[in-house]
Every structure is written in structure tokens, then in C-alpha cells.
Amino acid sequence: MRTLLTVTAAACLVATSALAAPPPLVPLPKSIDGGAKLSWVIRPDSDKTSALANDDGARHGRATVECVINSAGRPKDCTVISEEGNNFGRFVTDLAGNFKAASKDADGKPVEGRKVRLKYALEKGGSGSHP
Image (cartoon, rainbow, N blue to C red; front, side):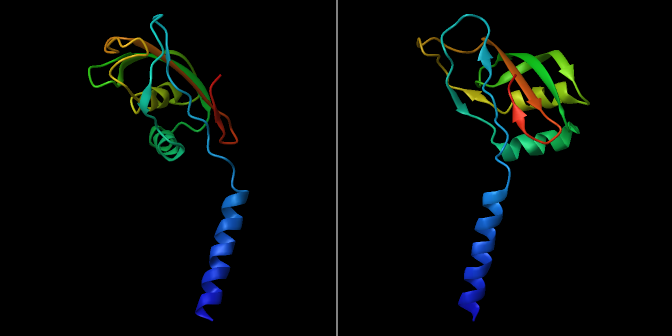
């Protein structure tokens, strides 16, 4: 009887997760200073993105931020270029800081000091995108 309940519960979990909406896409910051392509070794996943949105009170909107990659490979010193929605610029700034670039770009040059831009939108239904 216990085995039957366990199998039934597992089947229900699989069916429930199959019906769930796919996680929002987390776009990659793009280089805006003309250098070679960056490699992002750490990217926030949909769970981290959702947690940041909740922390910042960002329910839906869109924003574009520009940042400079610091010596640790993290986008920092971000400036909000455009914003629609409550606290959305702050949310995208926080999201950008959760990325980490490899120490060198595709040409083998250091990435510290490179400028990047991150665009992100979160629709009312909860799906994310990059405009």
C-alpha cells in the first residue's frame, strides 16, 4: 500500500510539473563597446530571477541598463537607460549583477572595464523576455 501511494504521489508531481509554465528566459548582457564576444560563466536562473523580482517588488515592466564589468567579472556601476514599471530598473540592475563573465573575451583580451547592456521585460502573465 505504501509503495502504491508513493508511486501515485510521484505521478501527480510529474503531471503537475509538466503543466507548469516554462521559466522566463534570462537574456545575456551584450557588449556595447565593440569588443569581442563575452563568455558568461555564471548566469542567474529562473528561480534567482523570480526571487530578485520579488525582493525589488517588480511585478511587470521592462528596463534597459548599462554596466561596466569589474575586476571580478561582474557587471557593476549600472545606469538605468530606460524603465517601465514599478522598480523595474532596480530589478534589472540587480539581475545584471548576478552574471559573471569569463576573465577574457573571445579574442583573449581582459574583460574588466568593458561596457555591457542588459534588456529585460517581464509581462503581466509572468513570462520574461529580452526585447
